[in-house]
Amino acid sequence: MKGNTQVITTLNKLLAFELAAMDQYFVHSEMYADWGLSKLHERIAHEFDDEKGHAKALIERILFLEGRPDMVTRDGLCIGTDVPSMLQSDLNVEYAVASGLKDAITLCEDEKDYVTREILEVLLDDTERDHAYWLEQQLGLIQKIGLPNYLQSQM
Image 1 (cartoon, rainbow, N blue to C red):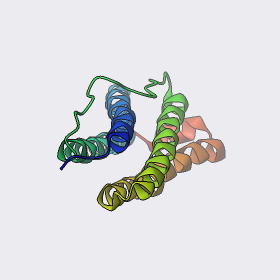
Image 2: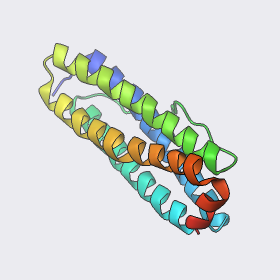
Image 3: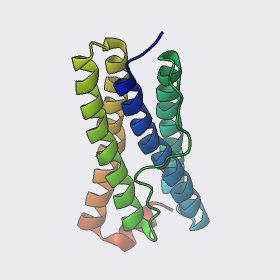
């Protein structure tokens, strides 16, 4: 099915965010594992899998619309150097993804591409309710109980 070129371009922009998030989560999860923070490693490895699923959904839709997925571009990739900066950088990517998804949903509505809109709404729900919310909680915990206590709880 030949899709709207503006929608396909927008889906590729979203894919760039999802691929960056996927790469970032992968590196961060391995850093957590290396530091012995097994709970963080496990959760962030799960987030990596979620981002892979998001990228897959976008790739499938781009292909269905007869577009070509851009697997090279990464947008927003920022590897942290310590736990707070890693969590904050992951949260920043999630905020960027959520903003891009909202814009894309509006475009799909304007272009009457309701199926793509529904796919993006599922991704937005996962991004806001699961990913961003959990990251906000972790940064809040660091503020409330202090970094040493937080790190101890993640071993």
